[in-house]
Length: 414
Image (cartoon, rainbow, N blue to C red; front, top):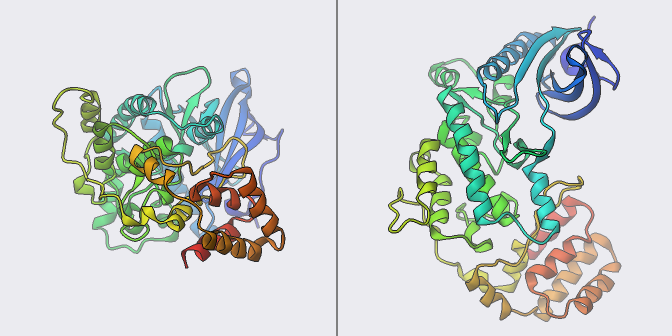
């Protein structure tokens, strides 16, 4: 009995696929399959991306559904002919495997670029993010005009090719045609596991209606693009930019931008789809008006006033904790002291309370043992004027396990 695509092993380097593509290395894998770097022997060994479509799920009984998903993605990619979207080159089925072939983009993701900037002590500037948005929004406008929604926009799915100035939108693997979505809404058919897999975006970047209900529209992509923009500006994971109780965005506390850009981003990040921009063109129009006198923009979603908890050193320490990537070159969601002038003045007045230091020491000892006392003493000796925010950040680096770091964070809240 032949193996299903889901149970097939990874293709080894050097393997010739379809008597044409030589596998070089695995680039990545996820719920819908694997991606390889390959050389096309019929095009002078030109580099390309070979996507093996092998969803994790049911066995042979679901193979026809997988083929339908595969064909849908191929159809989506075939429609898109844009210099900032990787070209669709071919699709085929061989040895019970389904493959797509795309242009290889040699460059860096914006996750990696952000990580490199943070190691230099900064994030993307307002001017850089405005230019970046102006370069990407026409791509989204083009995609949406073809009745396609990307559904998975994040710093990992936008690349800057080496030697080029324009960003490229990659990985339409969960792309969805609007007509298909509208058809699904009016259908009474039960949603299968495979269907659910194709309806998910990235948590933190996808809006609530997409994650919870599988519903999307062009404004869903604009929301995810807005989240990506504030991540580039602040260098923080989306979960650390949203209030955990009110679920409102608090990104303005961690960077300084002009009110014009802040209003545009807040409007992109509105929780309700009908309160957001509906087209990429609308965003572009407002971006072009930045700096003009008496700019009349669409009503923004305003951020609440500074919460009283910001004056609490323990609260400052809590907000600093973030997971760090273990992959070299990927985003380091650091927790710098907010550079908003008002916050800066507040933090200069804060000091580490002895009770808070002792509490941190006790909780750190629970996770790493008796070394906790020495580590705390060393941190304080080397950083006599450290803020609570920076203090907790340095402690977190001593906890190698992410789950343990998360438990440390919970213990400080309790």
